[in-house]
Image (cartoon, rainbow, N blue to C red; front, side):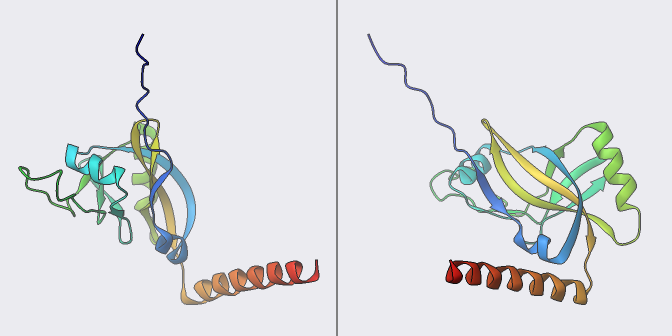
Length: 159
């Protein structure tokens, strides 16, 4: 008898947008599917993605991921012309899409890509409705983060 080998799928986070957490207040999060081509999936399996300046736009009642960079593998995409910065369609429910459209029309609100991750054998994108931070808000965030780090050090030192 031959053993049946299970095909292991990658699990976990592919890419995070840490800059968005620093620049914005996160109001509400959504999980969206992505329309990808084959070379993009292979590159994401290797973790070659960046979401630093990624955001979501709405065009003709469809959500599109703009600014996400998926670097092509040298071996996987020899016969295909790869465009690392192309716009990728996001797959959302009608209610989620209407909510994003409604909120992004308000002043100071936008929709940003927060993370790319595996869910089973599918790639998902976490998008969030966000509000921009002012400079003093960013300084407060840094101050709170530094204080929590110092507090942890003190607790370890005293224990």
